[in-house]
Amino acid sequence: MVEFYGVLTATLVYDRVPVLDDLRAIDSDTIVAAVEHRGLVTQPDYAPLRRCPEP
Image 1 (cartoon, rainbow, N blue to C red):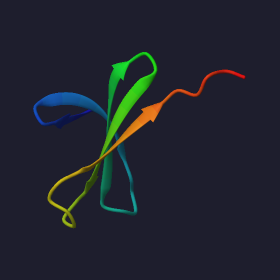
Image 2 (cartoon, rainbow, N blue to C red):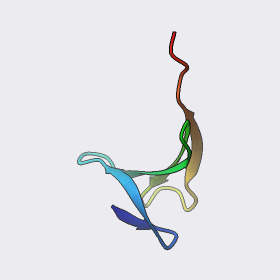
Image 3 (cartoon, one colour):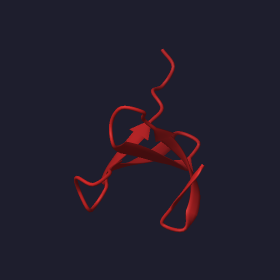
């Protein structure tokens, strides 16, 4: 867990690249990922991740 804009957030931390993926649940089928490029970009990129329906 890492603090992201004042909220403890699940975060993927990579060893070999300066990137953090902060993940926050919106509802039971949607997560928002904020991709922080440490030292490269001042604002994170955002991506919605949605659960695929079962076949």
